[in-house]
Length: 482
Image (cartoon, rainbow, N blue to C red; front, side, top):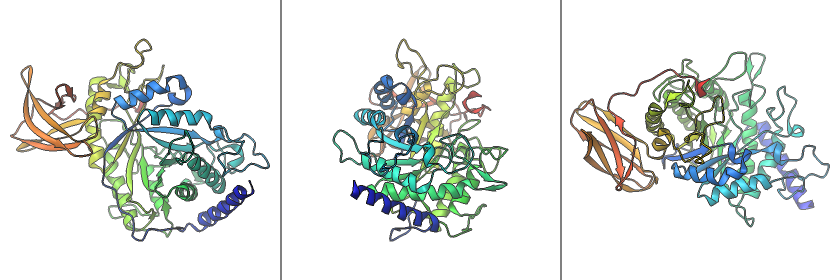
């Protein structure tokens, strides 16, 4: 116990020094660059925690939907003691004050289903929070206490404990630019959440990388819209302040602070289709992801991101409600087309992991954004068109002298893909493509065409949704049908 306490004390001192100075404690020999690699899909579904008896089936359905990653929420205040005991060793995952069992089962079941856990930590216990206003669990925690808990979590799931798998993907908080999850956003009229979060991110990265250097530190995905009344800071404003960069077409450094992370994350919910832009220039929906990537690229080039790895760009939530069952949602058939095109547009924007929210529709009200309809009789076996598009995305886009196509195989691996065009009631092969080792295939079919449908096929019967050559409609919808 003495050795563990000494480690904890040393860790607090190091974290306090790094947070107060804002400087990197370890930099790679060369500046990080943007990542180029596989295009993965993930799912988030809170029912794996609230309905643990359903978890094995939910994880199975996630794999059947083509996901290789599952985003899990580790609520700090649910694992830590409600009151901090005098002898509590927060850096030691074996301290009797911790209660890990429920989360252990989630991680074990996800890995058993062939899924990689992406764990986000949020919701500090009361004793770890600082004195900001807001509901319990949303107030910014003390960086030193966060660092100790992150160390304990990364150590418990570090791959060296019998029966517990390795977790390599660690995300700090959820939507830290929104007061619903992170308080406070402003001090008067001055935004303070980016600076607060930068200090927490530094402490988090120190601890997570301290356990395994190749762990990935993921920023908390930002909510896409700022809100009046100082409730939510617009994502690009939050990003500029966090990374100390200016706005405009050619961002420049505005201060000397650095942020420590390996993956930048966003939640580009959209009040329209996959090409739709947010109304505010500082908000970021699907159509605005290239602007966010450009700012990230400028910050990386300026040396304002501390990482020993190429910087990834991820989407850790997006979806639309469907109609049915939500009368204010996107017609289900159109939602399938939107999903396929959104995957393509995100891939174009340099996103290398896309996470869908949710697996199955809620019981009532908003959040009818499941890949599966809610049907207790058939236990989630009724997929929506969106599920088919998420598993096997494919688009065909007419150009002046050809039709260009893009897709990703259901296995996310190499395969021979047949691109087919609908001719009457039948389908005729127009091109053959070879998917790369990440499952991505693309090419073009010569000839000018502006009408009709194309699809992709792998094997005898595994086919994508038919994709129309006419542009998909950009209807106005409210996020989650609200």
